[in-house]
Amino acid sequence: MRKMLVINGSPRQDGVCAELIKQVKPYFIDCKIKEYDTYSLSPAPCTDCKYCEYHDGCYNHDLDIFFEDFEEADYITFFTPVYNNFFPAPLKAVLDRFQRYYSARFKRGANPPIEKFKKVGVVIVAGSNARAAADYMTNTLKQAFAVLNGKVCARYFIPNTDSKFYTFNIIELEKFVNQMKEQ
Image (cartoon, rainbow, N blue to C red; front, side, top):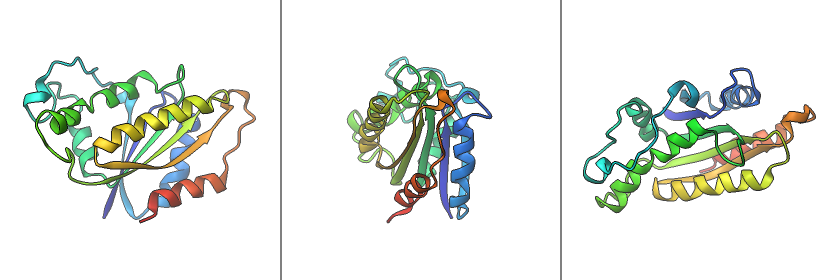
């Protein structure tokens, strides 16, 4: 059975990201789905302590189970709002902790640093029409997963959520899902 990791970067349990997670999950009933809320996860920041340059893993053990699930996943999906033109701080802290894999690749020669290839999707919601920020966020993930043995293959962007004039677009949702599932 394939495995999907859902990473929720929103602090709102009943917000737009939570609704989108509910909309996407039924399309992946053939997967075992693990869901992580980065605010509940409360990851410690990377301090560039250099531990991962010489050892497998991270000096901080707060994300050990998360990273086990991350490495085993076939699909990774990020659901995130735009905060100050980027990812919210807890999600950014998770991304910074990918340093363990960059060190494995570039300092210890593990190529790839994660054995299992991942298809990655990102769902971004913005209070305004922050398309440039969404593009930057997506490109950041593309760059990260180029090293992490994955590929960002799908994006679904919903702007203007602060105005309450946004819509959930079933065509874009299904396009997102199909891009994730394409072989």
